[in-house]
Image (cartoon, rainbow, N blue to C red; front, side, top):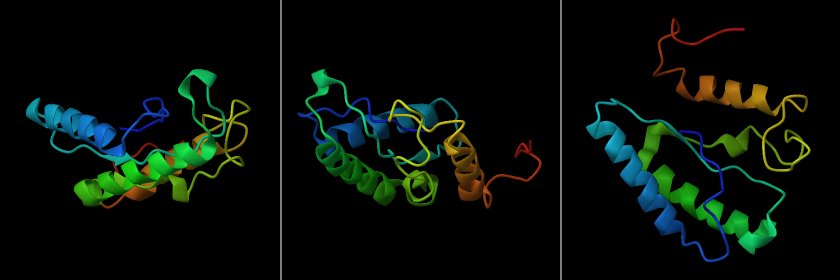
Amino acid sequence: MILGGNSIDATTRPREIYEELKSMIAELKMSGVERVFVSGIIERGQFPSWTGMNRQTFNKVRRAVNELLKKHLKQDYVDMGKRIRYPTHYDRDGVHPGVKEGGMIKLRSAVIASFSSTIPRSVVCRT
């Protein structure tokens, strides 16, 4: 699961997001998915006015959610924020990793690097 920050607004509690994600992971596993890998929520720079958010508040919630996920998921958690940097790797919208900016390549590389010990080489696509 590659997480975004759309559920974060000015009234969000990190534990609520964490519990929702934990529930989704449990549901996937009950459906037969053997393992669920989850990326942390990465930074963003633009916020719709209806969210009442700013970068500082968003990052506070984002980091708290990521810490809960990291603690719960251990090896199945990936901190994408270590590889994808705002604003360097972001599209002009300030929200998504950009193609021209190299963000999508960084995203792909981060996924492959993070899971290389658990995914057989034959499964990893090379372009």
